[in-house]
Every structure is written in structure tokens, then in C-alpha cells.
Image (cartoon, rainbow, N blue to C red; front, side, top):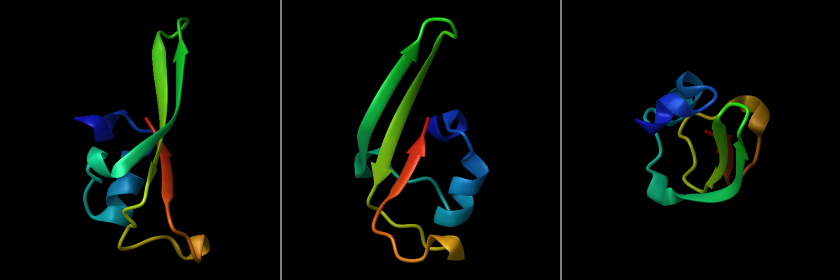
Length: 66
């Protein structure tokens, strides 16, 4: 399940109510580290959360990493 691989899955679920479908995201970066071994993916989603934090003010996309 991909949400368990992101940095803060509880926060993402809190603002969306569920997890965004990966078909609605654009991969903006990928980093592989052989010392981990690990891989970090960065995403942008244009599906906006229904309960964003007030400090976000006006926005048109959400960025998160896995």
C-alpha cells in the first residue's frame, strides 16, 4: 500500500479524508541511494484536499514524497 511509504501518511489522510489516487499525480523527481538502499519519489497532485491547513492559504496543487 503506497501511503505507508510516504513521509507523513497520517497528515495526508487527515487533509484528504483518504489517499489520492496515483493516477492523479505527476512524478516530479526520483532519487536512488545505494547506501540505503532507498528510493525517494516526489509527486504533485492537482486533486486538492477537502481540509487543507489554514496556513496554506490559496494553492492549486499539493506536493508530497514517498
